[in-house]
Length: 331
Ligand SMILES: C[S@@+](CC[C@H](N)C(=O)[O-])C[C@H]1O[C@@H](n2cnc3c(N)ncnc32)[C@H](O)[C@@H]1O
Image 1: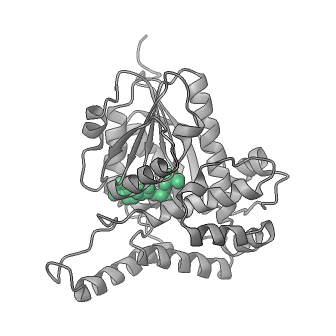
Image 2 (image 1 turned 135 degrees about the vertical axis):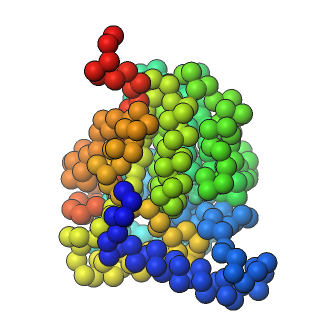
């Protein structure tokens, strides 16, 4: 993964430029050379809100019910709800053409992860850990007797989510574990919160790896592996490493989107592909079991909906399984 620098990493440069400017001008920074925190301590994640907006709109518009998140709208402010109402199927298709299928990617990954979680519960996993949970409502949507959900997220985002749930009179029964992946020991926090590393767990890291530095992603994967009993699974997605195959107009729009994310304090910092991550995961005992391409995901979940296959994906999903028994080791 290291050293895989290509033109799309210009986003890192934009972030650096913004941070440098911020450090030089921010009147509240303790010292002018201090670099700002990426996820700001007291501000809930904007990208989590954006993901909730996408799911809310897709739930409203998808008709066939491929994305069905009846709680997503609870996490949206009035203006965002109004914006969502303007996103008709025609508008979404037009946006998707420019933004390389962003809505389709979110729809496909939601369906893929929902399916993986459903199967994990049906086949006996009793612990689910949602890493960087944001406004994920799976603890409500997949609530089942004997299944414990742990929601791990940045404290500010989590506090905002809990307040919104309280206001709606909803209790997902999840264990909330506030964690900053950049600073905290995820494994220790989960153990302290009651996670049982002796039992197989379904870990889901949706829409999260791309906002961390590579070292933080690796550290989190190591922490997760240290808690993963034989039979555990890890579902995740990674931002595509290259914009190869995208039209010039799409590249421009994707870059603009990236710059806006950076300005909002959540730049894309990590890009890869499941195949490039396989050796890193293998070091921790994970084997990638499934990494379907967008065309496969589209055929599986979205054929017949108003969404169009974007062809070139912005994001890759994968499902890995943990097996501590090596195939070559004696029984
Ligand atoms: C794009 S959102 C995804 C949320 C959710 N998984 C979803 O798909 O809707 C990214 C999430 O990562 C979390 N996050 C980003 N940086 C983090 C950090 N350093 N520590 C903990 N969580 C972080 C944010 O709080 C946010 O909830």
